[in-house]
Image 1 (spheres, helix red, strand yellow):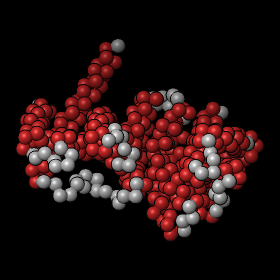
Image 2: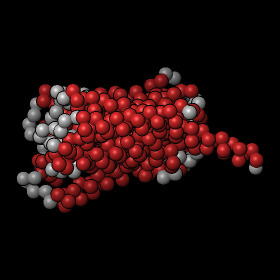
Image 3: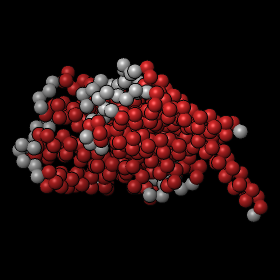
Length: 221
Length: 223
């Protein structure tokens, strides 16, 4: 019920965000219409980070408390997160092509660090699938998530320095945004964050049902 | 025995075993030399491009060599059934981690100590400076800090040798960037103060991952 309410809410907010992005917010002077993908790219980038942080917190709690629900939360967040990460990179590439003339620019700290984070997400799923026993896979994946979380700030810092840039603020670094653009961006971020929460709850309840089903199966055999 | 006494016992056990078999150092050293030879052909190194590509060649070589030797840190234990013995030892898991990390560090530093002069000789690049030696040591500590953790994790997976690179490489990217940049700056004659920010990143990485690995090691070696 709570989940359905979130899905409906995120749908309504998405429509509002779309209106704000395409009709309300002014077209950017230099980049033109392509700048509007920015309202999609920034929320996706933010969710890439948020989902990973939730995964890592779930992992820490799982290792400390050994309760299955924390692993379920961590895994579900990672599943939703890797989708957002892939989309963030795709929109980043679509943005880069008209603005810089190339699909991929290694010199953009955020694009490059998102790519590395994507690999850490992959490693998270990989150890889980390759572990010899399921409970071990969960613990291994949790360790990867914790190591990954500790690595993210250093990755961003080193890539920024590599480019000779000052370490940027993670989000909202773009200063001097037109208030109308700011409103569209905020609305888009809120809509996507609620979508993330809805998808997360959906995955968690699916895993819950799966394990219930498995228990039933085992009890009948 | 105190913590360090136990750590030294484990590190010493690995060292004796290595002295008798020379399994890791000899094979990793040959591998390192071969990688250097391959890079020579891959980049068609002439005098003009060499200063630009030398730091990259050096660090790619050391990363691959490091992965190879870290993989051997736990796999022989598992193959020869020594892991059970190691785990049932009356010592904490942190002792096992520290001991293993120390012996891996020693083997990697030996390989690097032989490879650096050869690299310097073959490519005619002055990499034998104190600055580059310091960069090599602190970066290797970072490799070992993360690598020992993931090496122990990898032995309980189905595709042992394949798992370590996939976990290890994305995590060590910051220190690879740091090491390559610092080496590049040293080769262009930069002083110590010019390298400060890179040293900071590498040392911060070392400290963070020594602590994180130390705390999480217990969960990867559960029997």
